[in-house]
Image (cartoon, rainbow, N blue to C red; front, top):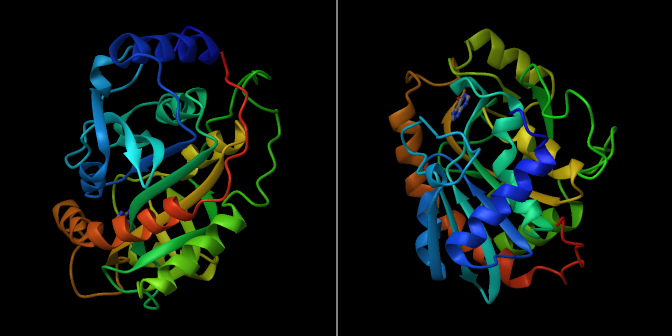
Length: 285
Ligand code: HPA
């Protein structure tokens, strides 16, 4: 990116407005591998292919649709990113987090991020849902590397409560009401794209990890940088390498996630319906 991110965001907000009229919503969502079906539940949905917007890198991963969808869900205005780009596709972290920064620039003060992940231990099974209580960044980098733009956020953002404790409790209460089994755990973000070795999975479990994946942490760092509060939800699609008998496979990961989409959608519908009052957000532009 040659333009400063701030100017890129201004152009992106303009490009979205050119296509859909002025767009603003207090809630943003990112849907991971196989989990894009949630957008079918939005009312008054309007879609833009991310490839039609300037500056955004196209997704090259099967199962990642690459759309920005606006609409209403549970009576709230939402903007959904169905699909994301990853560092392993060759994009640098500033590209990886640009869609999330766009959501923030469009007024999102709360972000729900979802992903498909492997279990780092046998306390969780394929098909289970895990609320992310914290993460460990083993991606080898940060989206905040380089000069800081104080208009976006501080040089040294605090990450003590990166995953909003109030939203975590709310999600657990909704899950209990709806009899949906959820775990709470630590997500380890890795560079990928190869899956882990069994030795790496054993190491990650000993380090305090519960689930492993190749996304999310950079997005959450960028969201926290911009003062956005975050709820993270992993769909456990497989046991980590060496914990089960099956070899790991992306198509299988996507299929398990798709099967869990209904449960995840029900859980998030309850969360969105019960979200506490929105904090006012000063528009970026
Ligand atoms: N490892 C890393 N990323 C993943 C996995 C896994 O086992 N499953 C889904 N995404």
